[in-house]
Amino acid sequence: MIIITGGAGFIGSTWLTHLNRMGIYDILLVDNLSERKKRNIEGKKYYKLIPREELFRWLKANAKSVSAIFHFGARTDTTEHNWDVLRRLNLEYSKQLALFCIKEKIPFIYASSAATYGDGSLGYKDDEKLLFKLRPLNPYGWSKQLFDEWLLSQPEKPPRWYGLKFFNVYGPNEYHKGRMASVLWHAWNQYKREGKVKLFMSHRPDYAHGEQKRDFIYIMDAHRMIEHLWLHKAPSGIYNIATGKARSFNDLITAMFKAIDKEPVIEYIPMPEDLRNQYQYFTEGDISKLRKSGYLEPTPPLEVSVADYVLNYLQKKSYY
Image (tube, rainbow, N blue to C red; front, top):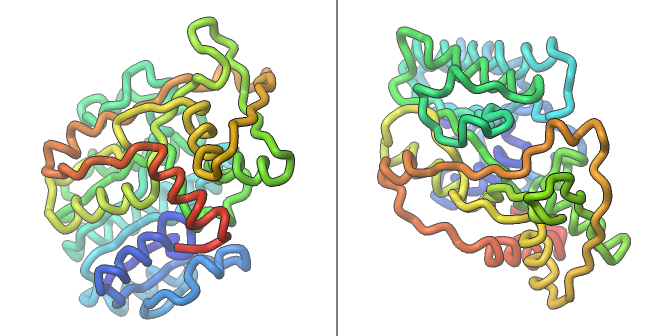
């Protein structure tokens, strides 16, 4: 039995489809299902879905049947400032799951975040020797950072474990995420409403408007990386889930317009004052560690992945 927490969310539900396409159906989903997430799991094959409050009671009764836990459930709002919520859902819940995997000797794959890198002053290398020096910029990032630190500090660990530092992931089944959905999702909906896309101006002389850069990774590419770590038994540790190549917001939006054969219409607007001191102008995940583990698949160009998302999902309002 495979367990996926956050199983009806963006990453969890698309990972469920990925497993189904591999012929794997013996899956327990853990999620507090909302109306907005129901369509993410429609038509998919799994054992059953239980709310997160029931998981540990279920594990106590069924420990020997579990073969792996994919812990993708979390409070993912980067603007959340209620530390009690983040501590309870992102830190303490994760610790309980990890301790179960240590005790029962079960592989543990969990979602960390590129938000742990903070302002990027130490770079974006998934080197565990540098991890304790990282200083996230928001409480969400700290909730992920503190769990990474806790697990690395444990004298015993799960037999195999992987902390996945997701960079800017986009793709189908993120429709329910609202303001926390990807830039591309927001850009598409803005274009449909207004016929144009608004991007933040640059407030630094070394970056032109819209030339701020991110490591945008398509969810399908992220799945292939996760599958490699899990099934090829890569060395345990923290891994960046990224393309390894930063692209500008202008590139992203231009690719969106190109997919529908339209000329880009971009308006640059001032960045809110309260964001300017926290805003990252460049992120790029170093994936040399992933490559060293044996993952050799090339990552499709941004333009190819954006076209797939736009034409096969956003335009059709379809799910994966």
